[in-house]
Image (tube, rainbow, N blue to C red; front, side, top):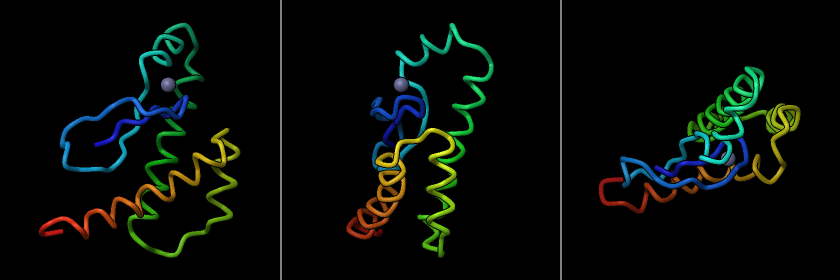
Length: 105
Ligand SMILES: [Zn+2]
């Protein structure tokens, strides 16, 4: 799985299962260091952003009709950059497409 920092929106590596190209959110070392000197609100915000991307992935993966404007508004209110919202929507689709090309997928 691809590890993605929820705070600075950067790639932070991969983790098992490596054959799964889905994104899992976490915090990079640099943000972790910054977080160590910040208060509880920081963690709450980070967890809210993690939950936002989890929900986004779920919506897109299910292929169900989504309220795009509502989702974008929610992301912007959390301080998520528009390009990261777009990536959050596109990535699960690419994942599903990649699964179709895999033997047994
Ligand atoms: Zn980071």
